[in-house]
Image (cartoon, rainbow, N blue to C red; front, side, top):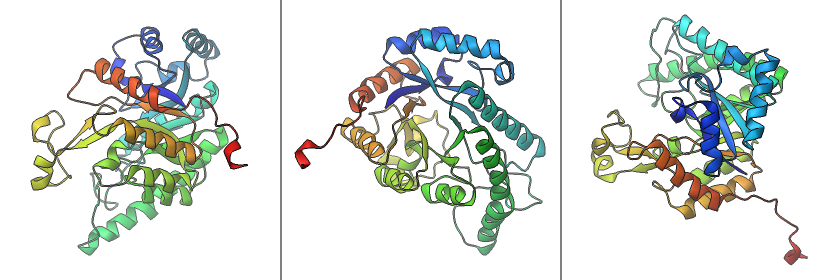
Amino acid sequence: MDVGVLTVPFGDDSLESTLDYLADIGVDAVELGVGGHPGEDHLAREAYLDDDEAQDRLSDLLDEYGMRVSALATHNNPLHPDDAIAEQADAELREAIELADQLDVNTVTCFSGLPAGSPNDETPNWITAPWPGEHAEAHEYQWEEVAIPYWRDLAGHAADHGVDVAIEMHPNMLVYEPSGMARLREATNERVGANFDPSHLYWQGIDVTEAIRFLGERDAIHHVHAKDTRIYDAEARTKGVLDTTSYDEVEDRSWLFRSVGYGHGEEHWKDVVSTLRMVGYDGALSIEHEDALTSSREGLEKAVDLLRRAVFREQPGEAYWAE
């Protein structure tokens, strides 16, 4: 199991200097943005797609620092009711899959997207309750008329290229929790699975290790983000956890994204790692730094320090004590 990093916070630095820094603090893998919200500061998608020389230079640079790419990231909304936005997101995602195939990277991370509530709406609509009844009808429209047809076609594209599509369960997206993830996978194919990011599950009250078991039983964890969340009861007791307060108004939010270890302790993260191993996941734990209470470098270094103590480097031996 590798300790990895989504390199977005270091977009102002070159990829080479970023790899140099990350290798020095004990990071094994990088997740590189190639479009959408992560941007493409370290891997300009169109510049590398179908360019053997550029791809060879990237491979040599990764080898120099003993690093591998765990995934290409392009988080956007291919189900958006604005055709221009949806088409751009779809193009980014399809090209990311093609580039991943060419780079021998087996995973692309992304969002499920979120449609409008009807064919005539202009804004995506995140529906979180079935009543009044028009909301249930809108939710069914989103799934049956928009999401499933799109993702069946996209899953076929991923299968053609031998690339897994790892969807981050995220608020304001159609797939935001494990049962929705399972529904989309069942409606498409095995190339569709989760980029398991626990930070969005904690504040929903979801038991993270149970969620790992749930998705692991379905072989549906393709990639993992190492990102923590802390619920602050002083605010949550009065406003709950569906909090629209700006992320930078830290003292007024009911929950915050935190560096690994600052929402849940080391024992919990060792349990997360152990449960991932139980369900057969042996890939990267890709640190996504979005902690407003610390700098990117300090938060990242503390997360790396904790995760290096938690991950297993070797395969388990035979259970000689059971003979």
